[in-house]
Image (cartoon, rainbow, N blue to C red; front, side, top):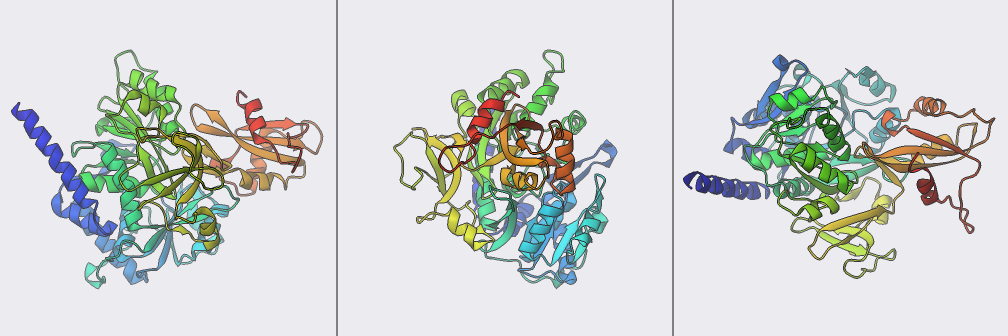
Length: 533
């Protein structure tokens, strides 16, 4: 009885502390407040291939080292408002650089590490970045050479601990106090051929991370994991969660199973996930083991979002892995919109995206923006503190916010009487593969330049492992057999398209289906035809 009471009191105290910290004005204030509370508690653990090379950073070390890195950046010329782009893998050094920039009050533009010339060049040009941090040669690709090839300014490497700039923090000005100024530019391909720069503030990121943290009912005894790109909007989302509840996460520079499993096991990870693709990969490893043996013995919760979750995946995880699965809904524009909670009903966890946090307003409308009756399907629109400030291109902001300030998501769904959100489709023509948005138009525009392609449509097809796979459907102009999946992917690589966007399925047709009025390609017919391909 005494133990239970103590545990309950401790949990209540942790929750109260987390909610109090969530009121921090800036990310740097949040870091300082957490470091003052638990300076010696671990926050980041780098899992290496050789356990002897694992590294750990405490909350106190995070604060102190970030100040020194910030001072080094300041001496390089980085000032409040200076735009700094960085394209770095999921490493302790990446977190140090990012939060050092937050200490200065710089504007930072994270770029996913597997983006190449097309996307990186666009991000650098549009953001007008004055500095660009890269990992050097990483996974066989020379990012430094690419940066110089693109004419980037202020290029420096920041992969290893000793690469980071270092100086006496006494040179620094006071930390920023305003959490509502735009200090983050995240990139999303959306539904157009070029990426869109999404503008965030410290407060919008704290609000998104708070939604995730409070929904999952976390404890200081938990051990999380980051196996996704830290440059993704999920990076600050997850880090805010660590800062609020004071527990650590294991960082994986490269998520590949079964190789990464040893890191999960030796560090006793209790909370893992990322997206539907991650759930499927863990399930595949679980199914290799004898009955009664768990793939990660300490795991109690899989959590994630970023891609549709079939109900059967939820049931398979609970049944076969012996842990809970909670799934949420977020996007680059709104890092966390709704999230499932571990103590919710199996029905809600399997079939909905969870509940919104306090302050997140969800409006479901028809195409003209009029609210539809309760429970009816419509377009999902959002308003709240976690919503971005718009886009780098003001014209795009005008198009995406309605007259009442609601963000038009392009996603379709309805809200249950319980408040749970159910997504039923997407109005936007965007493919979500392993949690990453892929613009169909970008690929189509490149395919139309191929001399053997008469016309092309790119669609997303359901895939148990990836969420969706990319399928290119082509009307062939040249001789039969001239176009193959191999030749098409080689061509797209040559045009600078990132590997994760490459089609995984090719269908050559005599004619694309079109409507009788505007001759618009009927993609839903293609999805119906090739879904089982």
